Length: 222
Ligand code: ADP
Image 1 (cartoon, helix red, strand yellow):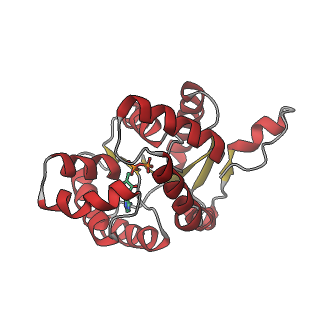
Image 2 (cartoon, rainbow, N blue to C red):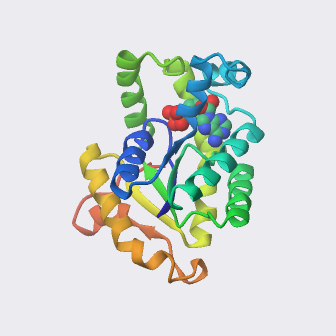
Image 3 (tube, helix red, strand yellow):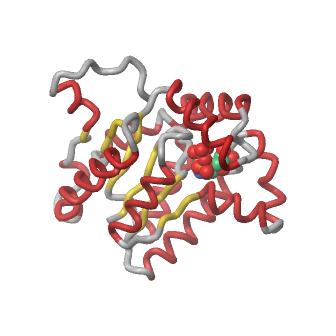
C-alpha cells in the first residue's frame, strides 16, 4: 500500500501516519521529522532549513524532492509500500513527486485527506505547544502555517480527486476513531488498488457519512 497524506498542521498526520505504517508494516516518511532531525544534528541541511521551520515557511522544493527520491528508493527495496507524511505541500511538489513515483514505479495508490476546522487545529496546536515545545508551535507561527496550508497546500486536494485516488476523512473526532476509519477504508481498497486503474476510480468522501446518519455537517472543514 502506498499512501500520501494531505492535512493541515494539527490534523493528526503524524499520529495517523504512524498507525498506517505499523498496520501495513511500511515505512513512515515524515518530512517534518526528517527536517527537524537534521536541525537537531546541526547538519549542513539542518542549518540551511532551520529558519524556514522556525518561521513556519516551506523549505525549498528541491530539498524535499531529494528526500522523496531517496525515501522512495529505500521503500522500494524494503517491499514497495510507504506512507508519505508532509509531502507534497504545494502543486509543484505534487507534480514532481508523481514524476519521481512514475520513474521508480512507486506512485501513490491513495491520497488521504484529513479535514478539520481551523478553530480545532489551533486548539490542538496550542495544547501541543505546552507539551512539546516545538519551535514552530507559537500562536503567530501557527496562524502562518494554517494560512499557508489554505493557500498552497489545500488546492492540491482537487488534483488527487481528478486522478481518482482521493480519500477524505473527518479528522475532528478522537484519534482512535479517525484511525479506525482510515484503516478500514485502506483495507477495503487494498485488494483493488493494483486491479482498478486510477482513471476508472472516483474520489471517496467519508466525511459525508455523519450527515447521512443525521448529523449536521460543519461549515468549514478544510
Ligand atoms: P505541520 O504539519 O504541523 O506543519 P510538519 O512536521 O509536517 O508539521 O512540518 C514542519 C515544517 O517542516 C513545515 O512548517 C515546513 O517548514 C517544513 N516542511 C515539512 N514538509 C515540507 C515540504 N513538503 N515542503 C516544504 N517544507 C516542508
